[in-house]
Image (cartoon, rainbow, N blue to C red; front, side):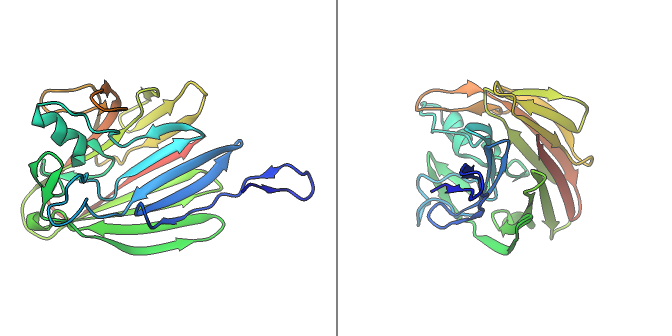
Length: 265
């Protein structure tokens, strides 16, 4: 229930952040010009045991909405086509706003909606006060590669500023190819200001700035099929449409942290 301000009698917006046990999500909330800003941070496990049916390999993925409008999105509904490549994409790691390592999903794809080698997600720390909410978590989906992914979300509520710190721990020698996608809703407009700065808006004049770590190579992708499927959203069953994806990559040889910044105006 919305509380009323004692002096004005008008609704008082109180941003609340917390953990949704059922969905296994951390929800970060604030308000800007009477519009609710909501960021979801997925710290859940994969589907159902023992084969993880119906799961998405999306550990540590994020989604963001401003007001009633989605900005950073998950893949949406499953897109049921005979081609397994589409089914694998829409349930796979690359279709979500998280990190993929060496072109592999966070679990082993057996058949549509069935994954083996369950990953474990662990919450490493959380802290919240009136100004800042912090959550740090990791998953071990790439342990066979000798790689561990840790993600820390820092939400400065008063500034509507979000820090995304991704640490890739390399425990084996050799190179690892890192992919970090940011998928935006098809109804948003994405403008590239320079190689690391992107401006995203919608028809209601909501505005988001995305600043990418300089250590990453970036490009805008939309409705791509070759060399790999990327930049698609499925709003309902058996329907898909292109969406703009900021596709970030790096080739690393040792433990490294990438920092991305979201600023909502």
